[in-house]
Structures are given as structure tokens and as C-alpha cells.
Length: 196
Image (tube, rainbow, N blue to C red; front, side, top):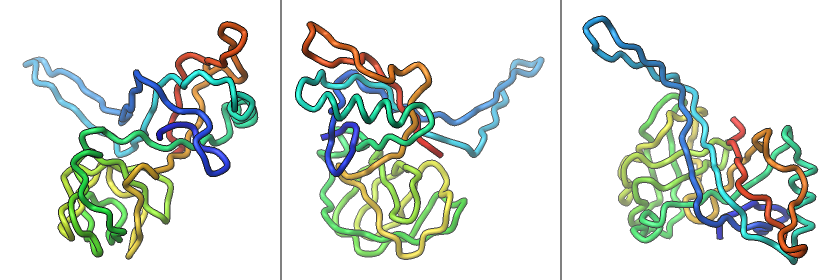
């Protein structure tokens, strides 16, 4: 179950449509001969835009979470995995990775099976969320996006429905509650931005 995660459980489940967007600044310009030149910046973050399942029971937990975190605090979410990646996954291992900051290819040990391309992962020693750029098969190389921000040396990573992302709320999110029909709490579309 994907959603806002607090006190060891999902307190508000995401519902469709849900958008998980990569935000990486890219500058482009056209020359006089109309050639396009582009340049990517190394900074990258994930941005999630979604609705939440309207709540009756537990609405107080969500309301308190949104208000207390305001726009400066952290809200944790369980990252929604691509359904195709979930269905193609055959690994149930606990693999570990080794690689240096700045690289996109890591060495893997302890994996048996496939972790598909497009799977979101989080290393145990830092909070950045990465995505597999190619499928990881057994102990083959792990190719990821974006570049690794911190060294990993024999570090495990989450890749199932247990990838937790630290987020900040967009400034126009409602920091409170909105009632529908006088019973259901429904705050409409919310936007959560990876805290990098």
C-alpha cells in the first residue's frame, strides 16, 4: 500500500491519478543553424502529485501530520512502484551494493533473481531515492538514475513496497482538512517534493 507513512503505518493511501516526476534542471538553446544544445545539471529530485483516499476514520492522524509538518518539516511516504516492475520482480533477496559517489554503476552481492528496470530503491546509509536504469539480474551490475550522491560499501537497499521517501509539502497544499459531505476528509490534489 502506497501513501503517507507515519508511526509505522500508512495513514493515508494514494489514489489515482498519481504522478511521480523526475525534476532535473536542463538548459537548452538553439544556435543560428537551429542545432539544439542541451546541458543537464547534476541535481535531481522526485516530485509526487496525487490525491489521497478520502478518510473518515484516521482523518485526525492525517490532519495532524499535514499541520505539524507544515511546509518546512518532513512527511514520509511509501514510494509507489511501477506496476510493471512489481509484476516482473522475481528477487526476494536482501542484496548489498558497493560504489563511489558520482557513479551510475554499482557492484552487487547477495541477489538472486531479477529486480526490474524502473524500480525505485533507497540505500540504508542515505535518504536519496534512485531508480534502476536497467534490470538487476542476480549479482550483475546495478545501473541507477541519478548519479550516486554518497559512497556505499556493502550497503543494503530497499526495493519492494518498503521504499520510504522524505518529502516536503508544496507551499499551496492545504495544511489542515477539507470536508466533503460533512463526513469525509478530502484535501484534493497534494504535491510532495523529495527532500534533498
